[in-house]
Amino acid sequence: MTADLSQLVKAYDVRGVVPDQWDEALAELFGAAFVEVTAADAIVIGHDMRPTSPALSGAFARGAAARGADVTMIGLCSTDQLYYASGSLDLPGAMFTASHNPAQYNGIKMCRAGAAPVGQDTGLAEIRTLVEKWSETGAPEPAATPGTVTARETLTDYAAHLLSLVDLSAIRPLKVVVDAGNGMGGHTVPTVFAGLRLELVPMYFELDGTFPNHEANPLDPANIVDLQARVVAEGADLGLAFDGDADRCFVVDERGAGVSPSAITALVAARELARNGGRGTVIHNLISSLSVPEVVREHGGTPVRTRVGHSFIKAEMAAHGAIFGGEHSAHYYFRDFWNADTGMLAALHVLAALGGRQEPLSALVAQYDRYTDSGEINSTVDDQQARTADVRTAFATRENVTTDDLDGLTVTSPDWWFNLRPSNTEPLLRLNVEAGDEETMTAVRDEVLTLIRRPPR
Image (spheres, rainbow, N blue to C red):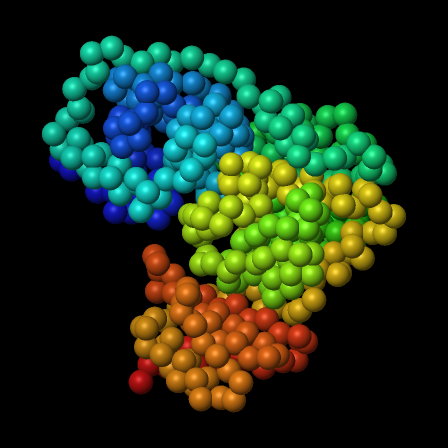
């Protein structure tokens, strides 16, 4: 019977419930298809701490080796550690993780050599087609000479590469609380931070894919409550929260207040531009604060606005030769990290910036946090297109208002802007509003929500 992969293969990765939606047999077919589509004679594989990850990654390796590819297994790692391995070894890679999803989920993030993304338009659709075909007809014929499977340690080299990109040698002593959420940050942080002038206060460093303390998604305010309280209780200089596969990092200041990922994007952009002589392109998605392109221009750089989603950011990074890119979701991309995202490198930049000054983090980031925003607000709607059209009609004729359709509907005035984007998988509209003050932001937010949430005609 042909496997139904419609709910398993997403826009950027493979993700679903194990064993209900996929299992080791399908993982083996994915391994074979990955080698077929990438034409790889060697690949690298890593996995997170989920209970199902070792078996699924092992099955993927068997499928790849059967097709003749030599497989390097780097074992437990963060997603950005897998990207490091793909980049430094110049091999296609596969990371077994479901990021912040609950324990019963697992997935595969795949990339070509040099950490180049594999998404729907860059190979993932072809991989899905092969897996569906082989699930019905049986596995493909094995190669005349199967590949080998060997183990390799990369954590030490990964840490050394990151530390070569940020100078932390002269920072003042800092006390930092890190919430790993029982995810892969508990594996990478001790090695990366070793020897730095940091007093580390670890929270939930035990690797546990059942997430016994809280969901490993720091963008949900409920999941950083423990970190916020601990930063204040410890009198720490800052807090860092990583998601399950530790490719995203969220920052908390000394007061326990969350720091906007846009402010972190602006801060890191300023530092990366300084490293590059005040020249370079910085990519930001259209949900990022207006402070990001403002700061980029002030520091001599060129901002480029793009759609939401890591495949778009990475494509624009490559197309423009950009030095850095950031998203509102706390994904940060670096040219010197093969255009891939690494929350750890962004965290090191924050530590370096704070450690080079005497002021607290709240004062440091204030210069990069210039506007008031609503955060992302989701609304369930009966008709995404019709509700979006209602909003467009309501604002289109107003004076000094412009609209664009780069990703959903963006409406901009001199004093505020908002973006309304449809979800690709649910009957939702996602609203983000930003303005110069709270009163204006609230008025625009409430007007748009009234339009999209009114009863059907």
